[in-house]
Length: 364
Image (cartoon, rainbow, N blue to C red; front, side, top):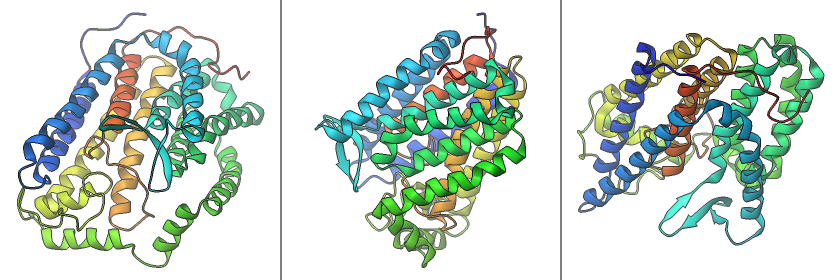
């Protein structure tokens, strides 16, 4: 494995988009702090960003071949941990879901690291033999492995993370040459699974009922933020709806805070940054010289872009409310670290020469 020392221009542009979103997130976090707490919030969010930068640096340094070889081992360890969270006292429950591990004042959400491991495993599996995506039997086996891996996540329950990875899987397989007819056959199957999940968990069903029956209260309050902010906003730190009026205002609904204080101009900047991130991420993938790097960089771009698109659509009421943060902008250490680690690994894979290896989960 050898890697070039310089980054491609598209990679530098991608770095710039991520950096701009991270800086914006820091500014929003500080401006949304209660009076007298700005210093503490700056320190806390700054530590999250430092941890994310470290995760990104680690991803850039990890040997891509070793990452592929050990992705299954890491997934098994994470799978066991997720089940232990469900059935032992190490799992922390909040909002009717057991997704967190509490370590002192810090809460970690281990399931988010499946957004790192699954794209690596899927990209490696396809890169080994691209003809697999044209045969129904290997695809069905891969789907079985996917749902086995996602089982503890569904039981938490965390339907949103599973939806992200389903969309990512579909996109990556289309990138790799999956015939459209196969995808059309799979859609009814996933619709049935989705219906079973929705009707199995009351809080998921209630969110969909709330959305289909009219705008949820959170979304209506977000609309107030857009209306009060107008085109140019009240100015950083001058918003008033952040003081308890909008629930989850620094995480899932951070776009509403941006709308109030920075106006539609600020929202458009966020949209443009994510559009640019998507463009440059796919450009970096296209410039890679080997199949694994192309697929993993494409998967990483979809993970980030789809989550951002869902979050922004959710805030304006176009999709049901789901606990998905705005990537690199929302407060939250685990999401920042997981996405940064994945981005570092993906970029490193595009800069390296990687030999073909065996399938990461033994599907022939």
